[in-house]
Image (cartoon, rainbow, N blue to C red):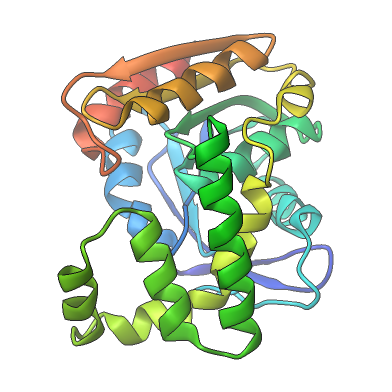
Length: 260
C-alpha cells in the first residue's frame, strides 16, 4: 500500500494516499481490501481531495490482533485520521459503511460521513436470514473451513450456485479464502438489529446515505433509514446504479457533499 501507521493496540495498518486537498478516508466492505476502492479514490481525488484507502485489519498488508472487537476497528480509523490530519471525512462502501457510521457516532474528529448501500437488514425476514448466516459463518470459521465461509457469503449476496462452484475453481479463490476470517468482523460491525438508530442519532456531523436506483428496494430503504436516523442526514439515489456502483458516477456526488 505504500504507507504504514500503528493502531492503539499495536496493529500495523497499511494505507495509500492519492490526490491533494481535504482528506477523505475510504472504508471497504466485506471480502475487500484497500485496493478494491482505488478506482473510487482516484475518481474522487480528481475533484480536489486527498483520498486514503487502507487495508482493514486482517486483510492485505495490514496486521491483526486477537480478540477482535468493533472498537478496535474504530481505533484503526482514529489512527488513520491521526496520520492524515484531524477533520478527515469518512466514506464507507457496503458493510464498510457500518464501520464509518459507528466511528462517526463515537465522536472521532471527522467533518462528514458518507455511506453507500450499507446492508442493514430491514424486516424480520431479512433479520432471520442474517441470523442464520452469522450462525453458520461462526461455525465454519471456528473449524477453519474458509472456503465454506466464502460460499456462505457469496450465497448471501445472491450469487447463483453454478457461479459459486465456478468461483471455487478461479485463481481469485485463494485470495478470497485469505480474507475469509474478516467476514466475522463485518458481521460484528453490521450487528444483529438492523439500522442502529440510537447510535446514528449521536452523529453530530453531516451525513450522506446513497443507494443505487437499480439495487433491490430494501437497499434503498436501508439508506433512507440511515439518513433519517441521523440528525443531519441526507438521502440520495443514483439512478441506474447497483451495489457495484460506478466510481465515475459516485465520485461527483461525494465531492459535492464533501465540498459542503
